[in-house]
Length: 448
Image (cartoon, helix red, strand yellow):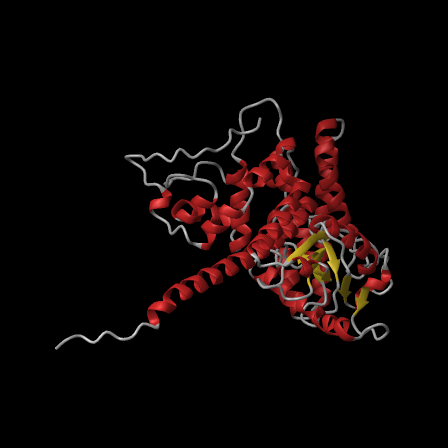
């Protein structure tokens, strides 16, 4: 059921302090909270609620927490902890009085991310609208864009054969204990020592001993798989629960280091892909490919992210450009005149290829187009800020849905950081303009 709309009474309380009496109402976070159209967001997500059940949490509270989390690069636990002692955070989420305890559970953020799903793009559109309204983003800046792809790494360890085999043994033992399947032997102690020794032998380049430990791990994992299958035979419910974990464990046991084709790189995150971007520091990264679209010119408030999307399956960059441009035009509400890309987009499938310019292109590149093409590389520091200041550098959310949500919310957080910096600069200019007449006044000479 939809929650009741949050209303401010404007009345005082003898035992609680009003936030307006504590905070500076000219603070950039207070100004941003007043410019976001919370009612429009609430109307757009109204279809996600059921007509039955108890009233849900206020949309402004949870969405405000998500925005604060990705604006300041915090975790779910950290943003809930900071909310308790930061009155600006409480005002941003719609509170009227200062609260001394967090009123909900931290897990509500996870449930809301799943609930919002595709609606998360509304937050990105709202961040662009606020940037346009404050003057940080102009309409002409939306018509020339830069498109690039990057890798959003997953929060997994570097996948080696010994680590994967050990993780599969631990995972199957954990599931067997959870569902009450009594194994003949767990092999946890043996597997831990074998994985540790395999890493040591590989570091010392003693590969015969290294492969001996891998064979030991594979044989023990095979015993656990066969033992579980014998114990759950004839129990449809348990067979359904163990179907996917046993398939992942069998894949890990059978795959080899240099085999071609599909491989599994994590037992608990099977969606992880191995992506090579040609970097000298990291030849291969393990996560999901993400497409980022930014303004080509530097707007008054900086470079804003116009569109962000996860691209599972590691597709070729050129095959994704057409869909990305169409989705960007739908999000920003105007046609894109020119798009600038790198050489990885050669052979793209856009509807109008003449408006796409590739790095290093000579034909048709002159004047303004040549200057704008030189600015194509300006998207790289934007991606760098999204990885260092945001959560694009390491995704801790579960599944492909978590990957998609993390990319969009990181883009929203980047835009909000740009807007906050713009509002802070505007306030500084206003204060300087007010103080300038007093600075130009002649010095008063006191009578002696």
